[in-house]
Length: 196
Image (cartoon, rainbow, N blue to C red):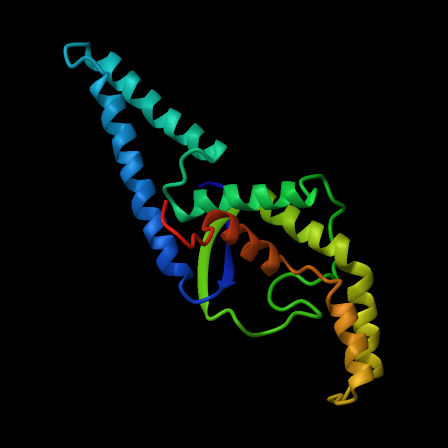
């Protein structure tokens, strides 16, 4: 994919195994689609005609990936899932760019560790990643500024329950990109209690 950037979703245990299973199913589906499409190409047609039809088959598969109808790679699966997540949040709009002091990569103010022992890496379109970062910044910037002021006022470790409650309240108002990546993974790999 041209114009992509790697992102990492930290996820719960078992997610990578579910992802592997999904990829096996999707790759088998791609093989079936390719086989069916190629079977429709007349072997007696001219080499030029066969090449044109074969190229059209590949273009059709690429369009299916773009629409999220075929997600036979981790990149295609998560690209589609991030777009779904952004649309559900109402965040699939143009956002002002974050200022230089905005968090970029790594932990955002208010982020918590824990519960995410596995990692999934995908290469997503640069513009989609930029939209996620801008949306997270613009919806969280007031809470981030307040958290930074809170840290300035509490430079040492704080054990006072009242002070920590104020911090927790502000932290809950921050949406870091990692939350969007995890939510996208949840869209892409819903947990099914009973096989269908």
